[in-house]
Amino acid sequence: MADFKQIVDSVKNKSLAPVYVLDGEEPYYLDKLMELFEHQVLSPSEREFNLTVLYGRDTRWPEVVNACRRFPMFAERQLVLLKDAAAMPEFGELAGYFEKPSPTTIFVVEYRNKKLDGKTKLAKYIKEHTVYFNSEKVKEEAMPAWIKRFGTELGFEVHDREADMLTMYLGNNLQKIANEIEKIRINVPEEKVLSAALIQKHIGISREYNVFDFPEAFSSGNKEKLYRMLSYFMTNAKAAPMVLITASLHTHFSQLYKANHAARLPEKEWAGAIGVSPYFVKNVMSKTRRWPLHKVEACLLTIAEYNARSVGIDSNASDTELLKELMGKLELIEAMN
Image 1 (cartoon, one colour):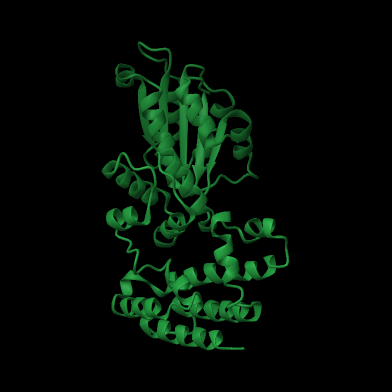
Image 2 (image 1 turned 90 degrees about the vertical axis):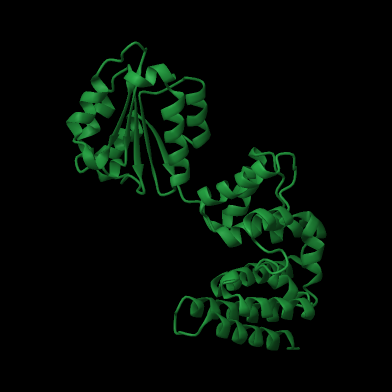
């Protein structure tokens, strides 16, 4: 199985295989690759006679094979794109072509929103005779790292805090995140760092009243800021859905849980054990005095309960009501011995 960069490099270097099969549930990479094939394999003049775009729901398998077996016109090769192949009932009939493709055709199959069943004969043919790429969804816990890499590609340095902030508000929708960061880059072409101020200005995430800062205000004991944020969230429910608040709190207290255990290790191992930048590790470790393990565990259990209630499990209360209840219980835990 090829990876994204390998395929991109092969297209740019014109070192092309006869058949590519692209499947998976993450549309971002599929869209990028299909656009790359469509615009980079042939020159503009070659595309006029040698580019064929077919759609699975509208095409029978003999049409696909006939298109692939045609000879190119006024060019060394032709390009055939089969989009939305998962909607083609007779897709399995293409196995014979995958085994013996035309040497003058580049055939690209987009099998969107699904992964081929690896146990089938067809999948084995594809993996043996084509360049196969699976576009997997990026898990939310891996999104901050993805955002930092994408920022680097655009010339932005993205710190942990800002990567976490974008993940918290935008989830793991790669296209949406890419569009937002690209929008910022267009507006500030010379900036080197993707700061919280830029995110606030161009995406609309408030730095003062955002879910990302809320757990820090609570765990540090900054009551003035905490109550100011609570007041804002309760009067602007859409700015901080309960499900995001509980997710942010869970991430924060999970970090404190790791910090309590890391305290038994040598200081040089703290950052790795907690999973934070060495720049932030002392700030996290300092909170273990205020938040010993028994309090952290009690908070995590309470947060998990209200996360479930926020999505309607055993509750029909509003986000505002749930937030009041949750913070009351967390403050009682904070006051425990």
